[in-house]
Image (cartoon, rainbow, N blue to C red; front, side, top):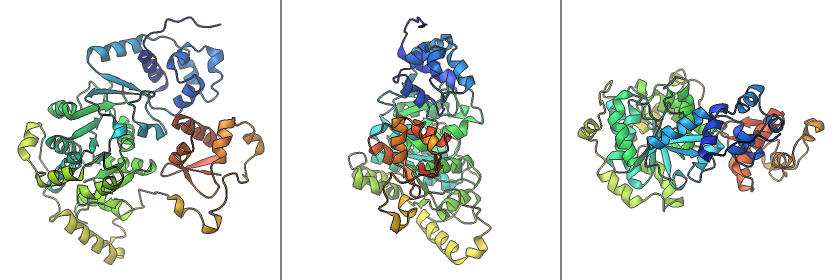
Length: 455
């Protein structure tokens, strides 16, 4: 029996769906595929219709059968009254880079002047809350130069390095975006009320959490995954080895993003994290140009080398500007002495000439990026995708036509990226949903770096 419901604003149903399933989850893309990309159709679905979605848990199915939409209407009205933007997964402004996440947010709330991030070069700049003077000055300069070239500086508006990254971009009159681990109307940390206003003027503040949601500790790993996914690369300025900044770097590597690190002294605790990343495959940078050279060659209309040069000439640290932003510039020390270039030379010398002495200084690599070209033996290069598989044929018989086609694109000995499958003509939502099904059925395995391989 069909449910008779009055159709309200489509945005209300997006909010309702995000409330019922948890805004960041791994099943909603498959649900949208099943119901014509319409949250309203999901809202209308009765028990019989929802039973078609075999991938839903019993809890999720019961949640979707609860048609109470009052909270969603209340949130939608609150956003309208307070000029809070709501960006849903199917909106043209929704960042495409988030769609490759295992758990992309269905909706994003934002305030300020959100640029179309699909047409920008975005670089995340992250680091410790307990910065040194070296880290503060270096971060300010790097963010200033990145923003002056036209790149968007993305960070988490936290104390320390994050706040300096935003300030550097604003000082350059560039664009910056802050990603929160709380509701859009929650000022966290409270010391950054003024900074938040300036970020909204020169960019935007965004979050995947519903209004008034507190800044719970478990939100920040999810927030970090969004920061790294939004960006072509993530730069770690200063951080101890066990900091959240390195978690962001880890997420960036898993998402096939480039990880950059600012070198420091091997004896400086706040440089342990970046030095650790450099030792294990991150790109060492000593100036913004090191990050931007690739984009000058391949995306010259998005970043401008002339404006970068102007930025390099005017990026000297400005303590007065930090005071204007209400930023506490207190540091835990001066940090390493010397320029980043000199420190990198010293670091490389120390690591190459004192390998045994430094073996205990580093633990196992945090970043494990697998490159396709390194994962396949030369004699197997010409093997086609439709090779024999060692899985139960009865399991293959349960696949839909699309699932079987995507399965046939994968090899047993060569990892395949999501980007390769999308370039093959499959919609990103379909690819991610299908890969999830194939992994659940034991046909494929996911690898670090956003890669997949047949079992």
